[in-house]
Image 1 (cartoon, rainbow, N blue to C red):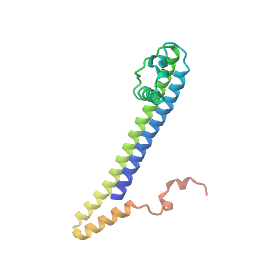
Image 2: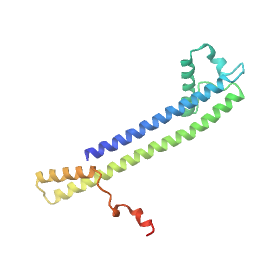
Image 3: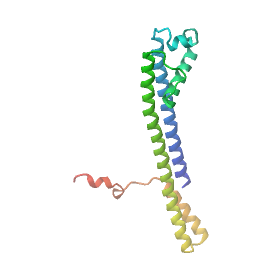
Image 4: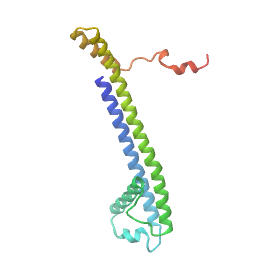
Length: 174
């Protein structure tokens, strides 16, 4: 059971890390999109002019773009109000994308948590019922420990899948 619990935790942690990397990657793409649009805007009131980006190091320009991308995508707000129609359209499109993206991330995290809890509950319930059965029939304590240990070990290892374990096989034509 311990191994199975560790596998569940590793699976959940891996999924969470994957989601974090997706968020970072999409934030990076949003930053690149922002930078491209900002540097091509010739308006005197554009974000590039307001922030004085031409005089700043490239790393600062990237971090400002990344900051805009993260805040616009995750909160629907930005530290830079749009100064012209082009920037307004860019912000609105990215914020709408962020709304859909964040809602799908939240639903994915909720589904992972529910799945994780259901797997743990199922495993715990099976072990609880076994222990209850063994206590009910006054099984010797040494044998009790041996049985529960063996069941925990066997339930955490993946055995060979048998035909009766795959209900979908009945849907295949003969």
